[in-house]
Image (cartoon, rainbow, N blue to C red; front, side, top):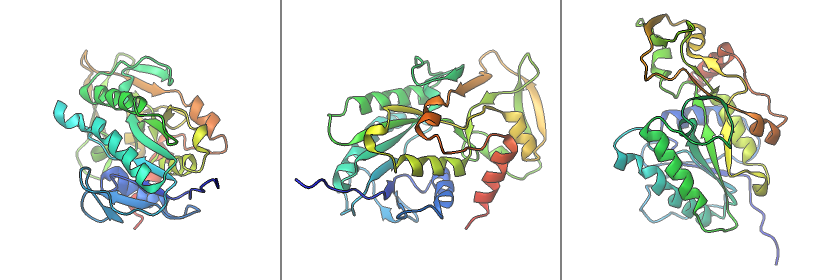
Length: 280
């Protein structure tokens, strides 16, 4: 039997959200076929909602499941689990050999340099929903399709701080902890995220691990991002429930993509965000 050759083309779901829009701009100029952007509504190459008949799709190498709920009730967050089967159905319909599912650093809870072997300890319902999503991925029948859960760090311009970084007069309010600093998080620049996804999609499917932290190499303090964006900071005492540090270990990503040099500083992250925001 002749082995089927799969193109490097990607099908990316959930493309009409804030992150999807940034990725579309960051993807421009990459080598290889342009991806197909899929959304439920709005401007997209393919309009489709889970539950509808899957349209005829061209041959695809990778499905990138960008979609998912980040907030809402328990029932709404459970949609993240339901989308796992829909992503696999898209892969089977298009002949894709890999699916990259968007999980989250929220599964870990608080901690420093958390690697993929760390025991999940989420602090919120969203983190619990993403654990359930990863469990659904692990329970899929073993087929030729490779599934990888990307445990995504905060994406600059598409996280809880995004609105506050926009040009405006109101200051950014941050919790200040006992050491005099604010929250410290792992971040990834949106342009870097596009490059990571593009490069992962070109790897042999069997090279992908089951889980992968996707993050920049150096954690960033939120006040540094605010200052890089020239936004004033107003401090408040951190409540007991506040979490100062959630940072990820990037060793597995660096080993998998050794030639990919990622941005490291708050100034570089903000410059990358502004570059994409003004790309049309």
